[in-house]
Amino acid sequence: MIRIGYGNDVHRLEVGRPLILGGVRIESDLGAVGHSDADALAHAVTDAILGALALGDIGAHFSDKDARWKNADSFVFLARAVEMMKEKGFALVNIDSTINLEKPNLRFYIDEMRKNLAEVLEIEIDSVSVKAKTGEGVDSVGEQKAVKVEAIVLLQTK
Image (cartoon, rainbow, N blue to C red; front, side, top):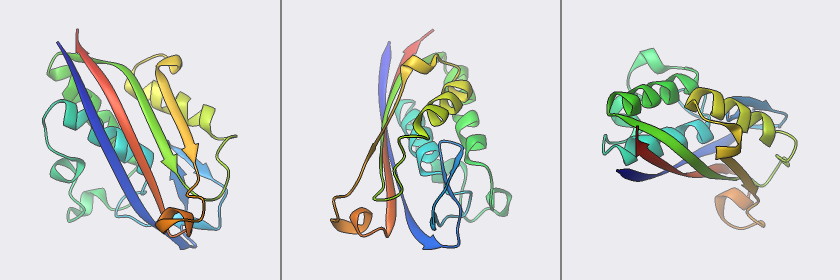
């Protein structure tokens, strides 16, 4: 059996906050605001896995009302989603993701993001796609007010 899951995440950007994507700290004047470390890439992939398993969304498992998750490393959420996936008898085949961020240019960070994701997802790096797009000056991404990430995963039974 195969399952496809889709996840997305949006975080507001503010001066003085860290910008973490795929477990990588990005050099930027603007960072993402969130209850955890606001790693929108990790959040979108977590939601995609949970969605493929029909287990709800990240908020159902890691509520922003729960003090345990304040400033938490988002890879903790992702690792737990992988555990749930394995408990249900599935393995990840591949992931495709797109980061929408006006600035900075992410080209030099993408390989490290892919490596980090591959490690926690327990798959080869060539099964992890991370792309980056700008907002072309349009909407909250283009106006540098937000970072948005979309991710799709393919799971299959072991």
